[in-house]
Image (cartoon, rainbow, N blue to C red; front, side):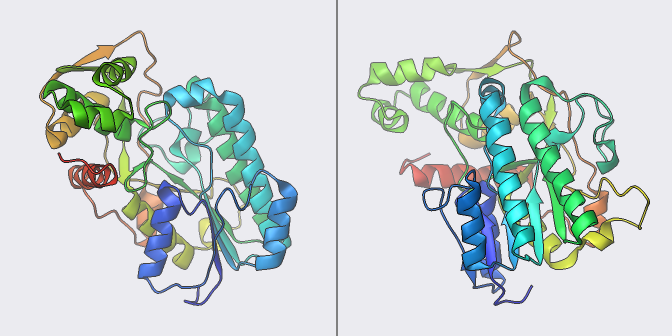
Length: 352
């Protein structure tokens, strides 16, 4: 990419897209074609085609997606498969029609089988069944990476797919109805600390309720009590987390340095050309809760609700393919969570 190349980031307001935009700006890129969801509905084929015909972006980062944690994935199964398929199909096909030089499609490590060998190599894709709670989302993302592969093979495009591990960081979603586990823990621990320390006004403000009783009821709805936080599942499943600053750097690195031709050797059956992006090690949900509690300053206990699903027991991606091209993460998990908590406090104008 040249510094004046026109770049479109689909989902530039989100967790990954905003970090990619910031990374590109820091590297000197300056020509962006950006649209909010209100300005461009990516599930509408005609709108997307007209956008590409008008703007003619040279490079595309496809970050836009319907995302959420285990509750949202399992509850809104139809939304997750429909919206993600529509977004992907429209953007990828329009990128092909308008002659985009290169596209980076962001997927997820949820694409891999529920009981996949660990660490998970790219070649383990489609070797056995998926985890049930996020199956619709995973199938949509598998379709996206296969669409990129198919267009590359048939049309000679240069569409690269990356499969990131659990991402967290600035601009994360803290809505306890549908957020991922790490930001959920940060908010739960903070609310529990406020409740335990009887900081009523701050608790009311942070829960956007009218009085202390309503604030306590809101907390109770999500298993947050004085000196206690309830957590779904056994606490034993292991998860890997990567700060969105590192994630963005990996994506820009791939866009700048890796082409489709670098991901296969001209085999008769070209497949599994996607690239895992990860941190390199994981922690149990219990260990994550303890780490976040220590950073937030919550000194209560955890109650694990084993009647709720654990999800996939472990999904640690093998990142040797990406590392072979020369990229590795820089931000430790503890430092990254501290950065996220500081950002959360600033966004909500509250003290620790």
